[in-house]
Image (cartoon, rainbow, N blue to C red; front, side, top):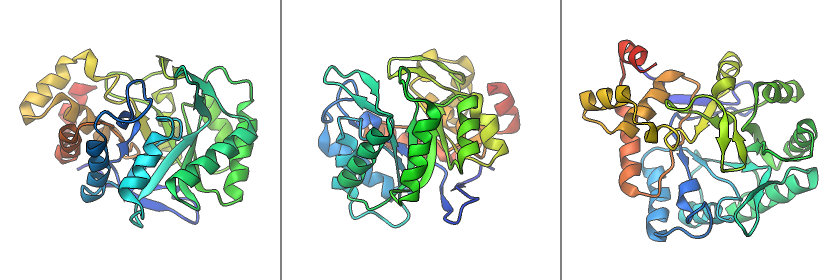
Length: 292
């Protein structure tokens, strides 16, 4: 049986236990992850459905949109349920040409945190990921020092990292408590690769470290990278369960490790409902071996 809950920052004084299935908001923006969604009422309804469906973890960033997903979250859900964790990311910004550029100097990270707080109408963010972006000229350790300082000031409760290599994760862990890691990972793409969204997307090379240290691993692009590959093994299991291939991809993540917290995103209410049903699929050990 798959684990239904996961604890974030279990070694800290403020552990957060939540259902082990979240929602990523990136797809709620317009084309190119920019501007307002094509169907704004549906976007707001999906966010409201997160709460009624038992989702307690929503992933966002102020550079989605620009700042569109944060505005939608506040409009749809504020005042927030007490058990809802809104996780945001800093370390990146966007240019008018929609390019992705580092925004990782200490003063820039502070600007991003303050912007997230303001738009989300929060006094403290429960979880913030520092996202590593290719092309930055600020040393990783310097950015992390700034993030830990912001945590000491109470701007954020828990600190995580995103798009990190194993060496970067080791460095971060040597500096303080790392609550979570958000890297690219899915059945069809488990290792790092080049991405149009800010250069290299770091992958599942860090999963073993996360498991050894009881750090939840939050995979992004789990469906974006896997679905186009049309894996016959996924199709076979999907047919057996009368499920969609997306549902089997998500079920595989839930079974792959008890430390994985999937956050599939979609702008479709229909697909959102289908994704939720993936939590009901129980894959056998033999099926997991087949899918491996």
